[in-house]
Length: 190
Image 1 (cartoon, helix red, strand yellow):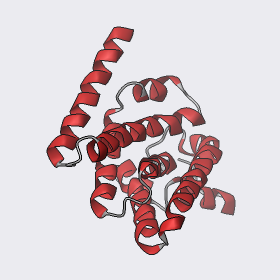
Image 2 (image 1 turned 90 degrees about the vertical axis):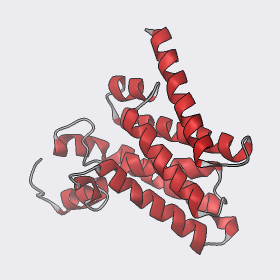
Image 3 (image 1 turned 60 degrees about the horizontal axis):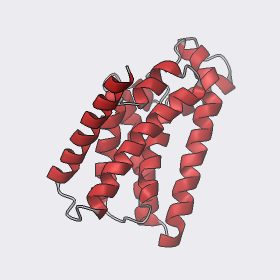
């Protein structure tokens, strides 16, 4: 890591590390994703219902833009293609999950979205693992998180619509099934 020489470097560092959350010695991505959770809860509880989707989509797009824009700077500054300190992709990934239900209106959904996104992002199931390893550019940094967010969306959608009773058991069962199915597909492709 280089010294912060200019005001531009300082600004970029603050944004890229989510105001220092990416520097956490324990689970920096999870710590940074808390920003996404906070943004979603703010939108959910403190804005009119009609604004939920446009605000959530706008926040997702703005964070994604800065993730792509600052990636080249972060790669040089942190001397790593996907440094654990560069965490805008984690925030964008979390903000992508509640787009399936922007008006859900409860803390349970927000917390399940957070937990499932982080689990899927940490274990990087197919094809997120391929994206993470093979796409050595700014799109790979963002898209592996969006793929993990998609899996979280899928579990929540099925659990809240098909199983109706979104119990802890049904959510974990669906997550387990997706992980197993992903592993089987990955083996077939080898």
